[in-house]
Image 1: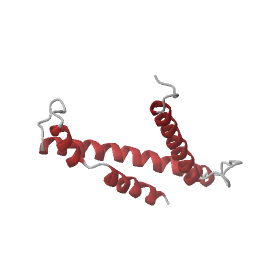
Image 2: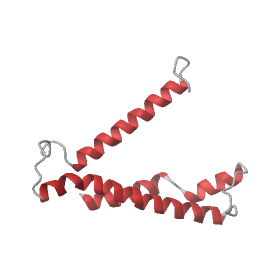
Image 3: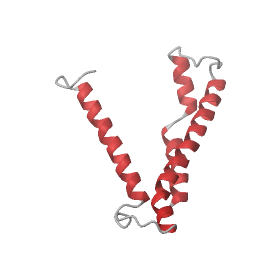
Length: 116
C-alpha cells in the first residue's frame, strides 16, 4: 500500500501538471519567472521544481500512511487502529481539503457569498 501511495503521487502530478504548457502559457501572457529565460528553460525549471515538490509530498503522504502501522509494529496499542489506518487518514484529509476548496469557490462566486 505504501509503495502505491508513493508511486500514485507521481502519476497524479504528471497527469495534472504539464510544465511545457505552463511555460507556453507564461510566454503567451508575457509572464516570466525571475532569473529564468522564457521558453524551454522555464519548462525545465518548472519540471525540476514540480519533481522536487512531488518527492517531498510523496514522502509525506507515505509517512502519514505508515504512522499507524509503525505504532502497531512496536506494540503501541492505539484504540482506533482497527478503524483508522493510514489509508483512511489520507482519504479523510483529501476529502476535507476538497470540501474546503468547494466551499471557498462557492462563497467567492455567488453574490451572497462571503468575500475577503
